[in-house]
Length: 249
Ligand code: NAI
Image 1 (cartoon, rainbow, N blue to C red):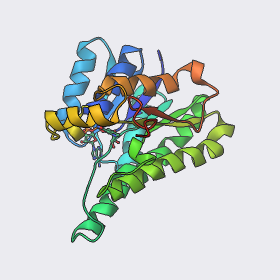
Image 2: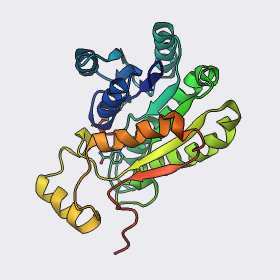
Image 3: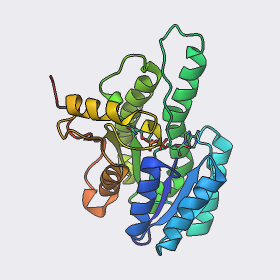
């Protein structure tokens, strides 16, 4: 990864933070972006403190002008943009006839799906110039199956997988690979409120490896998909889920 520049969205927490760290450990220049300046700075300080190269930007991925500006600034700073990791995400739940459903649905699609298109559009000229551009979209096992009362998130994550496939068709001729990772249950900010007992019960029942995953285990797959050795892999959808999607009982 030495000399490569990577943009990670939602990089102040969970999988995004682990991904930013791992790319930096492997020698990449890392653009750490997230909603809150203080949390972004913490991750930048962690990386630079460990000898890595990182710079932080406050970035709300629902703001196209901000996305365009941050991409321009990080290219000015690092000289290129080779890898885009679309990781930022949120979850909203509730029945389809609930009072706030439509607002929540639109927000969830905006953050979890449309935002990927925003960053890809902004990054594309630079990924083309890179000669070996890489896009990794973070989907979910909810992109293949579904959980009751999670329809906005499920729709968004199914969309991420479709978008990944479609853009792998479109961007292949520019040498850009587009893949997605499907995390299963992972210990991050998003799952922090689930009581430990419920996590254990779920993992025992649903995950062949019988535990929640760690954000670093997902980051390893994201990094792998960006290695020069992965040059012929595109349009793939790789579960990192402890076997959850395989189990049929
Ligand atoms: P997390 O909550 O720890 O991190 C998500 C980050 O995204 C946060 O730092 C948050 O500030 C940021 N974010 C939210 N809205 C944003 C916006 N509009 N603009 C910029 N940043 C924004 O959660 P986690 O789990 O690390 O989430 C990362 C990705 O993994 C998400 O796409 C999520 O849907 C996905 N995922 C998570 C699973 C889990 O079990 N934790 C399972 C499957 C997928």
